[in-house]
Image (cartoon, rainbow, N blue to C red):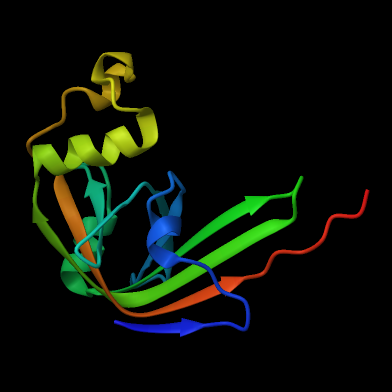
Length: 146
């Protein structure tokens, strides 16, 4: 994976362990499609859950080239951290242990407190395994004058 850093940068691993939304961009006959997703960063790959209702796993099967954008933005402080990824993805069998780790990142470690939609996962779900070829890491933060 090639990491391209702007003049101002940040720790990519620390950033990817935050509970941020990612925008997954895939190709379709109608043009690019974007899906907001939760992700889990492990072994230099992003893992994303796909459900039987989602269409992005089918698009990835047809064309594995994807892009993912992740932004950590706080208008109160002027923080704007951005990581943009390009690479290839595959639909993999569902992994219940990985799903629990992903949900704990966003919902906390106590599974009893999770919304019921996340407690019992459909075995027909898949994991999208995104392997980045390049990532652009930029700190685009600004000063907030008050």
